[in-house]
Image (cartoon, rainbow, N blue to C red; front, side, top):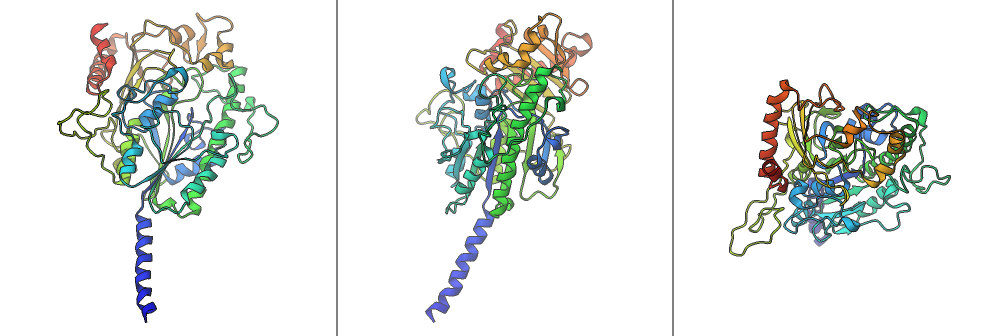
Length: 489
């Protein structure tokens, strides 16, 4: 009799548990390193990307998504904070002598989620500082042969963590080191090795003669060789996407997990990475929402990486707690006896317009880049409004500085071998690429590779001034220290 009474109770508990599990809202944030539009679903005819193509078919593909800064470490600080890097203080690389780091007043995505009962995990590349700010409950990287260049093995490590006995919803931060250069200039991680150093991840080789050189790069044998290596690294990333998707599917988690894929900045070639030109900032961004009704669509909503944290919190139903006394990003500590203030992001959730192809009010965005390496001071601020893009080269008196690996790359060295003055690099002369004016204004609809600067043409002075005023006002609003340069130079 006692057993008969307990059975309905156990059934009720079981049903309640299953219902709670179904209500859980998990998140996978997949960040590739230096990945551009080398995706079949984005129109690339050479790329082999079945994993990303499936994700696009199951979700929404953004066409006007922007990294706010075209540098690995600084970009990641934006992704996980919802703030521009000039507000976090994380102006460039965290590692080595670069030593950039985020203010203690910043409360990143992981801490908001932890306060709401989430478990958090980082697998792969971290590249942030300090660790007590960008804190994860778990770091699951041990035993992965080849480390973060072996995304299939990373996905299997993710399987072990995801399937642990833990009733809490999860946030997985999954970051490959591909297709970043590795092993020296021009070497995309053991391209020429006879033995595959990443046994779980297949080697799919590409031939230089297959390569279709994009208009922002010169069409040379050296570029084609590097692109072939790069496409192999991109394919490794795709294999990680494919396996991680299967891990979620096999464990019944696809229907309660938000899956986001993007990159920290553009391809590791001159003209892209470390620049806020289109190839460095306009990147693939794919979102699979478990509840979306329209799948396989696109949206031209203009978003940037400050929108990622607010969107994830919106999906999870987490409202940030007030900040004690100071706004996040201010380089000071809480003042006693002062009331807490609302915690504000620079971005906003794009969930309401995820299935809208041409949403209203999503036609303007702002970007901020200051450093890559510590020796590469070249602050740029950008506004993109509709079809017009204004770049404010704050230190325009200086020659544009090169990241060490980009300068030493066969692509760049072959370009400058015979002189600079009249030689072209993509849509610009080498001279114009290295010696930039204070303002660059482009019609990116008519001139998507930014070959014709309109800033000094009389017929474009009205839009130039309008964008200048908006950009300065935004810098003031976000407390950008470099706003002073409008008034003092």
